[in-house]
Length: 290
Image (cartoon, rainbow, N blue to C red; front, side):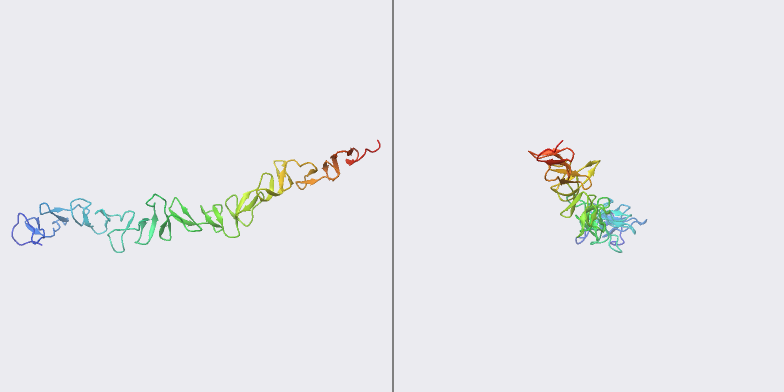
């Protein structure tokens, strides 16, 4: 307020309160100019000086010296600046207020002190993901972190954990399901795979079906090359005293009289001291007449 109706050329402090010269009067709080420009008290000269045009009230002449902002502008926390477009990332304006407050530390943007609306990175640079209005380092079970949006999204219903939304993006499966080679979940593994810790694992080479890494239960034909089952292994050729059965892809036993054979009743060779009868493909202790 004016100190009186006298004409002043300078002002002084009274009872510890500074008075500032504007025009020919001294004021404890500098008034706006005739053109409604805000002013502040300059302590070094005890005179009134203009605020920056972006401020409503201020402590100095710079745009970072605002104390309050014109209608529709927001006072940015910690900077003393007014922003006509809203609070900056990491800050929010409470309802019916134009003064920005800090978001929770983990939020990139927020709508209140407890509600994050977008996430950025942690103090150590790790990506944070938005879930249920909070920013998390790791999404909950059955959700995955989308790196493009920094948000948690639900896994496919067949997955227990996952790295994407598709049914082929499973990392683990719900109880009773197995994870297949294409990262989908299934009630059973297909041919060529066996279940190990609920994960479908490739059978040994040549196996059509198997129960472990060293137990084949049936053999395949691959690119025209047949494999034959013998003692839980799939072989390209059958051992002595057995023959390859093409209908079952198994090594079957020769007749006990044969050393080797082409089928169950046709010997190719005979044990020691036995003779192969040419006409019958049988083994005998002596040659027949002729």
